[in-house]
Amino acid sequence: MCGIYIEDFIQFVCCPQECFSLAEGLLPYSSFITISVYLILRLSTILNIKLICHKMVERFLNRLCFNRSGQVNKFCGKYEKNRSSEESKSGYERESDRIQKFFGRPFFLSFTIGIPFCIFKLLFGIMAVRIGSFRESETVLAILGWIVIVWAGTDLIMNLGRVFLDMIHRPAPFEYCSIAQIGRLFRSPVLFLAFDTFLSFVIICLMLWLGWISRLTTPELYLWYAATTLNLISLSLVSLYNEAKRASLQ
Image 1 (cartoon, rainbow, N blue to C red):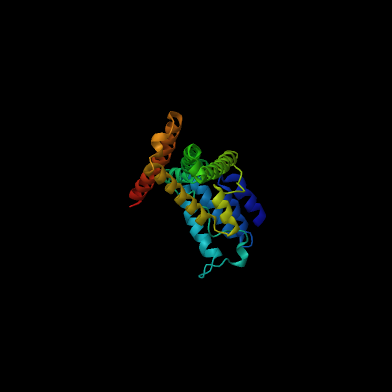
Image 2: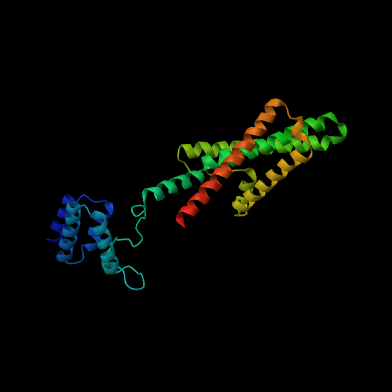
């Protein structure tokens, strides 16, 4: 008899997938409880107060299936205590979560942070090679420039790879930069990524204080402007969004 009621419960009530989980959790219990839950949900669809009834049923099942210590009772089967919180969120909260997830995607992080930093490194390396090649006494500077160019090119390929894999929804088996990839060997990729960011800022400061920006060609100068604009504007937008979201929650 209980199985018949469960079939009717699923057939006549248009409810989400969790209703089936609720029904499975009630199988070991009496058919009276099953009929009661069915009538409550059926009445909610008629009176257009389905959300209220779902919350009432959820509270009832939480008390039924969980003891005071929060452990699941044996007869509750597949019913989960921590259900997804998406249904309880408002449209604004769901939209905010989508924006927050976009800010954390490799596509956004690579285009606004990783690739601009690669451009800064690349231009620094080009200037080092250019200046070091004119003077025989500064051969070390030229060698350093070539090392930075290879470093920047490697990081650029890694960032473009992260962008491509994120667009096809595949996880990346590598980090955003070569230094962070080395950090994987020490199980601290985030720490090494922070060190790479520090070195990038040092390169920016060296370009400014050494006056090398004034020696860039016109295309190189516009490339520097584009990378700076992309990096700073995106950082400002993320900060503005976070502050606006924090203010809305107060």
